Length: 76
Image (cartoon, rainbow, N blue to C red; front, side, top):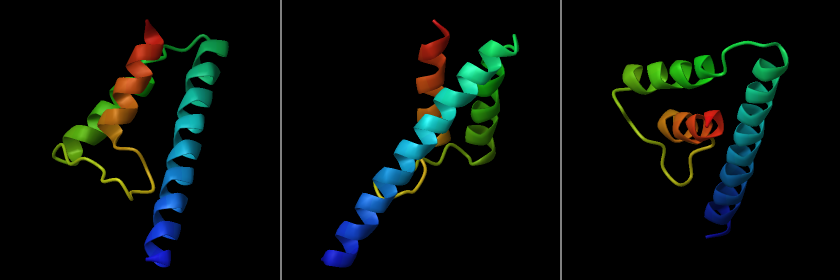
């Protein structure tokens, strides 16, 4: 049980880091006057390449679909 808890905590921490990196990417694109939608479309391409497979709750990365959806909201 302890190993499972450690795995879940590490996965959630890593997912938080991934979201932070996504936020940084969006800010970077804005500062450089690049189209931020490119971040979203890149992740959407990953979704298509993966066949739409979604990450599970102990995954170290949020699913590309979840990431694209979250970044799309930042475009508004």
